[in-house]
Length: 338
Ligand SMILES: [Zn+2]
Image 1 (tube, helix red, strand yellow):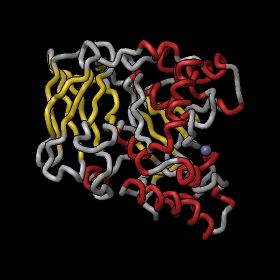
Image 2 (cartoon, helix red, strand yellow; image 1 turned 90 degrees about the vertical axis):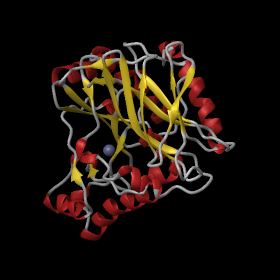
Image 3 (cartoon, protein in one colour; image 1 turned 60 degrees about the vertical axis):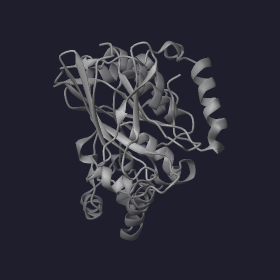
Image 4 (cartoon, protein in one colour; image 1 turned 120 degrees about the vertical axis):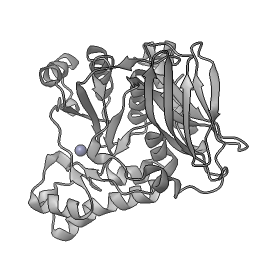
């Protein structure tokens, strides 16, 4: 099974439940999921997947697994107070380790244009402070709840270093439409540069996303994170939050297919290994997990992989040596052609 979520022991029950749900409900296809190959894309049509209102204890991990199956990346806009109640720093880092991005979606999902100046500041600043404590950076982007914004809201956000991220496709799956109705709405608007809005708090977002990724596969569409949400000096700021004994963090920055080789590069950091030397592993053709090599003194890595297939994503891990903790999952990735 694919999910290697960063979770504290306390969350094991939840993880077990999630696994049971995956197995028992409708992701039957995922149990035979092949993790040992990589799909390439030369496509120039870009789609941005975005998920609002999480994190949800069941639906968010399921969505993350579905994204891994297709090697695609997304941008998440969690509600601040839900993030505080439901996720630890390791959970949020897990989302980032997989290559997804993060934005601010206010503290309690109020209509921002109806807030006093003080309340507006509270709604926008509190989630950014929380995210900074958990990850080392403040989000560079936000999405107003209900899209409700005016100059006052945009100015307040700008003062906090955030640009607004809109959407172009909203199937309103929280209204519980038939999946075919939602797909009709989506298909009519699916075009280069489109931003699809779904919610990782509703069950329906899962079968809809599954259908979307089957109908518009990553071999034909390039799924990217929202550029405005990109983290500046990511390695430096995220690494600064880690302490001895913490699980490692990292990110795969590039996966290029060059002739018969796959070149993967990125970074991985663990304060227990201040001079680098963290082992990076990947899933080979046969599904066997193989060592690729180690990070250098700058906590970066670049490896050439020849053991891969062309049709599904390549998955990577950081080995957490010497500690009785789990490894760090670095996500599953499609190649771009170098
Ligand atoms: Zn929302």
